[in-house]
Length: 372
Image (cartoon, rainbow, N blue to C red; front, side):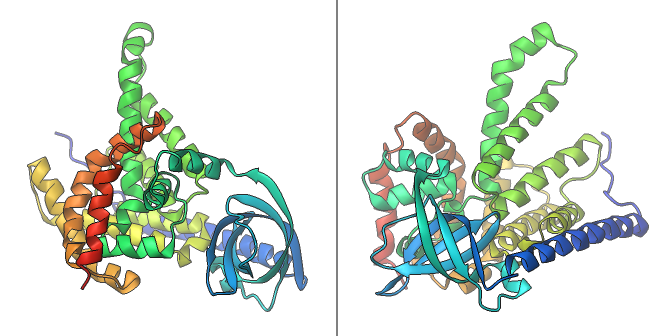
């Protein structure tokens, strides 16, 4: 058996990579700063924007989460305004001393909506198709978030947090891995005979990987590239590239290279909690695989789930500040999710996503009686 080699054999190689990544990071930060100067050049800024989310904040106001050409910001409107989520609006912003740090992280600005475009975004249209398969509002929100990364109400997020399954609903590398596996083996099964008959000289696995990766890339772009998906996609591409060339991919170095590469290309992710949570989860998985050698795949999956849960538990409690007796069951929910997710995805594609709604509601409603 050929032994896998380390990504960097010397410190000089890593230092060279780091200097290149730092140069790219500096260049992209400079470009972002130029965009910031143009954005804040005047006291007001007028542009089209996509309303990503709209939710009540006080008795008088609602908060709008907006996207303007990749810039995330928040504003407010009165409670009498109709629901504009998923619509494009023409908006005038009043900029009050917005710093470059706030520009990268996401900021609040007073605004005035000048025009509401009637067309819904493709993401919301698909979300409505998913929601139409459920009679319960909570399940509608859950499955829309599960497949399309759409926002959920704060009360539902809190309920899922008590149950310890927030990480399963929020799309991450875990979901991308499951979707990629489904696509890869489906394409392979469909095209295997044609490959063997007409182009046996082609590498079937490589071609199916490329096709699956392209589908995942379009899926990620359709969802506006959430940080966790962006990290997972980079890991997928870099991992296969290194694996195909005989490098060790289950390595802290691989994760470090991926994180540095992503930050060099997307400066704003420095301030994304979701990105760092996602990277932390992969770090603990790699750490476990490095320290423990378990041959049984079933035992390995259970052990990793327990390990990651224990490692991420303090961080989860600190961020979400919710805990219940059912929280410890999230380990088993994670294992069952490997089977549950592909089945639900297939059912929603054919329009039968509500088959297991009664059972899911029973599980979710148990949280109301076991809060600590």
